[in-house]
Length: 163
Image (cartoon, rainbow, N blue to C red; front, side):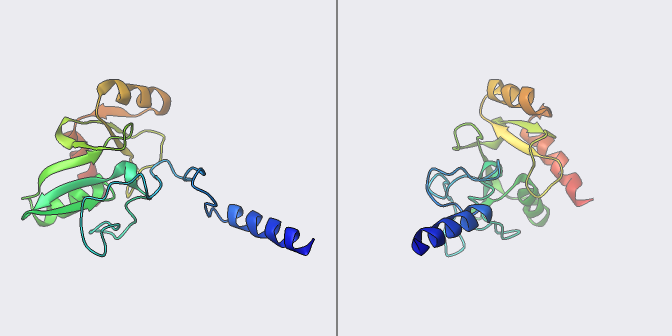
């Protein structure tokens, strides 16, 4: 009997603390995905961490960006950290972003960004979520507000985070 009570209390504690108890439980933040769903493009012992701020990439996966610098792939938790790296070196190439709908990396320059929605962003008060199609961006915008812009406008808005 005590074992059942202890097991019940332990489960309640873990659930109350936000610890996921099984693979079916959804992450608590919109930006998050399960580690198995996240595609990590960079290599090395810190491949799950943003090279600019150290945040966990699967935890903020739906705002992940990537770019090449000197043939090395960097993956960022957000357009904010991508922009931060651009301040250091403007030769970043091949910008990619996670499509919120499919969770796959797409060409950031062809993405439709919903900026300033009611859904919390990453590293900024102004959220920036990317979609492969205008239709998906419009659906998200209809439910959450915000403005649909291209990559360059979203990057310009991200620059304001540093002022």
